[in-house]
Amino acid sequence: MVSLQIARQSNARISSLPRGLVALFVGATSGIGQSTLQNFAQHAPSPRIYSVARPQTVALHESQLAALRRSNPTAKLNLIQADASLVSEIDKVVNEIMQKETKLDLLVVSAGFMAFEGRKDTREGLDPSMSTRYYCRQRAVQLLLPLLKNAASPRILSVLAGGLEAELNEKDLDLKDPRNWSFWNASVHAATMHTLSLERVARENPGLSIIHWLPGPVDTAGLRRAAQFGMRPPNQMTEAEAGERGLFCATSDRYGVRAGLVPAPEGVGPANRSGGGIFLLGPLGESTDNEGVLATMRERGIDKVVWDFTQQVFANIAANGSHDASKDEL
View 1 (cartoon, rainbow, N blue to C red):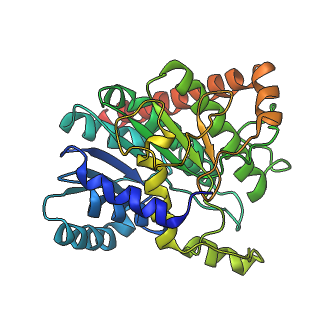
View 2 (cartoon, rainbow, N blue to C red):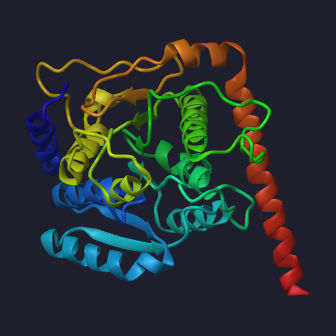
View 3 (tube, one colour):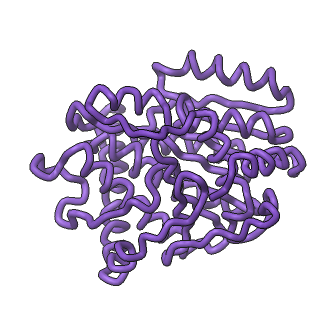
């Protein structure tokens, strides 16, 4: 267990890092993502930060960023308007960043929700609860690899459910059959597919540190909404603490495949990686072991099945988008 005091001490050392770290936050308009962004913006010297907001949250998020600019006048905070449940919108976000930056030091993805009211697909034909928690996150990771590889010690922090992976419905990975879909099945599928795909990225990019963090129950608006559907987990962490711990996981060399950001705290050993090469972390920053599930899926080649399926989903969306564009032009 990493104490909150240790996390805070580590975060304070971010101020001694080189100026001009570049970070992208997807899902930081509220909750854990917002708190992590706030802590990073306050500590980092002259950072260049990009944050994605849906149209309906732009005004609120811009006011949040304005407050952070006042607290750290050296920070450059940029708001990008996009819907993080649409793969095509993630493409636009990435294109904008690649036009402005030559590297990306930190990618933090935390968008997501549980679809308690049932499945209502996006215009791309995906369950939005799975899209925000898997497809769009994975799309951002893959497209941003060139910028991440240009950073000295690149990190990806995905806030979801590392360590809670479970067997997949291999014949219906996107749970199109109503008999297979439930808000819980969608949650498990998204987390498991995410871990398997992140492991694939890690194996192909050994210099990239990837952290899949399960923060546990956190007192966010989303969890308060879940209470309406009977979910009231005990021992909830505050948003403030989750943001401090999230930043620690994202920047401490304890979770780095190579050093380059904040040195690991004295007396705290390096975290273990999964058999696939990523850090699966529990709420308090300790490694979790889910090899009983993950190793079996790797041995059976399910990671490749998930990867190929995902690439086909992306290809179909791109093809449909091009087709729609050509129709619009006629």
